[in-house]
Every structure is written in C-alpha cells, then in structure tokens.
Length: 135
Image (cartoon, rainbow, N blue to C red; front, side, top):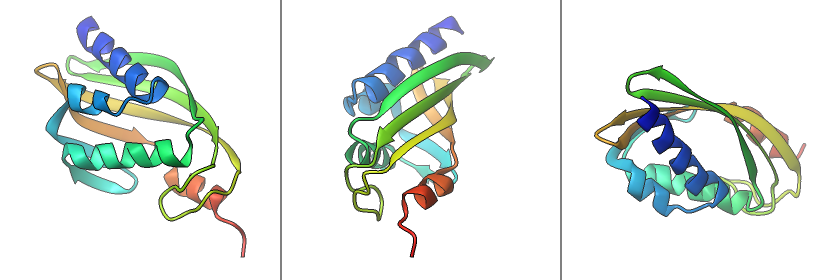
C-alpha cells in the first residue's frame, strides 16, 4: 500500500506542482475513468484536456497537498488546497483577474501501477459562479 501512496505523491507533484502533463501519460491507464461534478468520462484524452484547461486559466496555480491516505488496498485519497489568479481562458470564461482559493479531495484507484480511476471532489459550480461577472 505504501507503494501506491508513493506513486500518487510522485504523480501529483509532477502534474500539479511541476505542471507536467506528461505525468498523465506516464501514470494513467489509457481508459482511465474520470468521475466529477461535471460527469463521468472514460479516456486519457479527457483528463489531459481538462487538466490543461486548468493550467491555461490559472497558470500561477499554487497547490498544497494536505494529506495522502490509504482508503483501501488499491485506493488513495489526497486532500489539497490551491489558490490562483484567473489570468487565462478557463472553460467558457475569459480572464477575470479574480483570485480564487479552494479545497478538494482527489481519489485515485490503482491497478498494475497505473491510475485506472480518478474521482475529483470539488465544487466546480461554485468556482465558476465566483469567476462569472455579475450581470
């Protein structure tokens, strides 16, 4: 089980600290399931595209990993917080220069040293509402 936590620690550092999208290709199964408030998706391309969109919208994102936990033999959870200024295009929103800070939990299911399922627990609707200019 320690091996799985170590795998996720390396993956999250490469992806969210170093902002290296190649981490997705190195650590994730091609048919990874992504589960989130947006819906459920299958495939590495979806995960790569969504992650890249965060990097474009929030290029100065600063993520702090609060803890990593063994949920069970093949599942690791990670609580984190991040803050950034919205300086790039994010989803359908052009830059607002608004600062945001939020917390979330990521849950990773692992098989054969690859992430096969990624669950993101994050209130994305609240983030979008905070970035949307009032009409």
